[in-house]
Image (cartoon, rainbow, N blue to C red):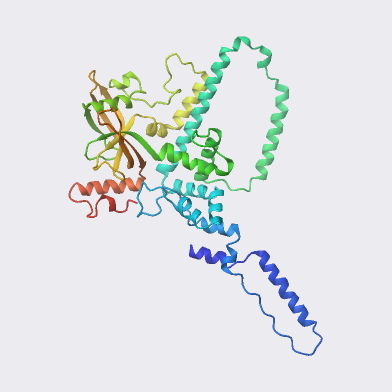
Length: 423
């Protein structure tokens, strides 16, 4: 950042340069027109502008702040707790001065830059979160269209045939005009470089949030990227579920089986499998569940064109379905049950619930979280529920390396809380 500051401060604004040049030219003219015979004094060059005076220009200040403005959970400082939500953009820069507070609160550019950085650095978290939001927005569109068609089908007898006719001759010239205008726009914008993969994904996610704003806050055009960031944190980065606690060795992609016989874990598996078919609870294959769309409910009628759109949407988002729409819960395989303790997110790949409520399950670990908060649910016989922050890909690999070393000794000698390179 020091080189960037020096580069920015070494070039004063154009207005200051022009004013200094005009003043210097006027001094030289007056000295040349002096009528007495004395020798003209050498002109004194104007003093360079002070460094602090350049900070009054918001463009320069915004560029400087962009180098130090990190957002919560960006994991810039590896000495910080992984569940610590403090950041320079939200907790430090706004307290420096009123000008810093106005610039950090009123500009959405910092959140856009942070999202682009995190999508590139941690695609398993932020890219997957954007894809999840886009998929949910498209599912909402299909649900809304399906409800509208069902209402129209109920009122079909009251409609007239004239209201459903479309005049093709009038629509054809408009289409031609749109085609010509689109061709002109394409030729006019052909010099603009195409967006990168991260920028295109970010634009699509912003459009999804704008068309289907979340219910927890109101979206505005000036804070769209901040709203997108908050939605990814609340609906993807944070994971909340019931907890099965048993110390054991867990590794991502390595399945294992369990037998649930305690009353609290019978309740856990019954709640986890409640939204899935009866056959899935009796040992048959488990398919992803998209509420209201797939699998279709008994008696639900989906029009042919919407069924094709739904199938295409499901095929294009197989990874999102596999990671977010299968039965899952938290396996706390480390002690103690407290903040910053690692735990695993496990999916139910096979489930056989017996008549007495006990169950034999086959589980697949999908990722890890840092426990952010844990509490006991009242009236459940000791069943815990927890909320945590998902680990990134590199942090998960480092944690598994530490678990592998700790199985033969004391880890790397520094304890789980200080192992490196986990942030």
